[in-house]
Amino acid sequence: MRITDQPTEDRDTARVRRSRLSPERERELYEAVVELLGEVGYDGLTMDAVAARTRSSKATLYRQWKGKPQLVATALRHTKPVLLQGVDTGSLRGDLREIVRCAETAHERDAALMRGLAHASHENPDLHQALRELLIFPEIDALHALLRRAVDRGEVAPDRPALNYVVHMMCGAFITRALVEDKQPDQTYLLEYIDAVILPALGAA
Image 1 (cartoon, rainbow, N blue to C red):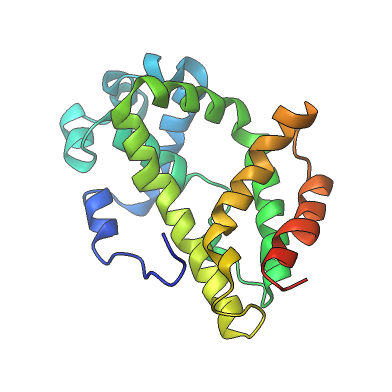
Image 2 (image 1 turned 90 degrees about the vertical axis):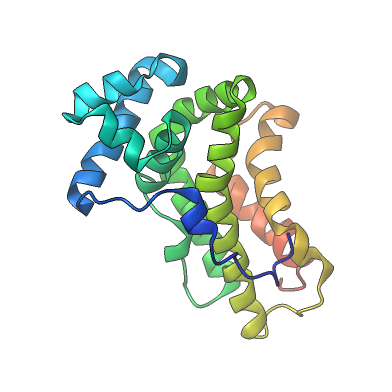
């Protein structure tokens, strides 16, 4: 996907059915789902358990969310500490550093949970697809919007080839350090990575 691509207009409607629940009730339900995931894992999570924990009917759950994969992915998105859509510091470097700060908060909260889901997604194609559509793609869209703002401000040339690979570089920053150095990507490492790798690649150092 190229950063000049605009998000598909009907993507949101394709991701999840419009809920008739109040925002407060939705939030309560999403938090309960994440809490259950932490307790029993994805395979142990059932719609019956969610219904009992949230005092909902299974019919309501299936009406609002197609099934367990969609409910889990939506719950994870709506309980994230910070969404990338909210990141706009006025500069590319500031935005990328803010992403690192947000990621550290999220990492402390649910690192083990996400590792379990990553394993489960390999065994459950429906979960894999739901996570991509409901959790990952919206963040990619937000990152592309962030990069377009940097282009509009004149921080990055619009034809810079590296623009199409920032998502890959960001993912690599979080994944490869543990494989190469057997260390976790802490905030110091990630901030240095931004200045040494991402910004120079974009011609914005």
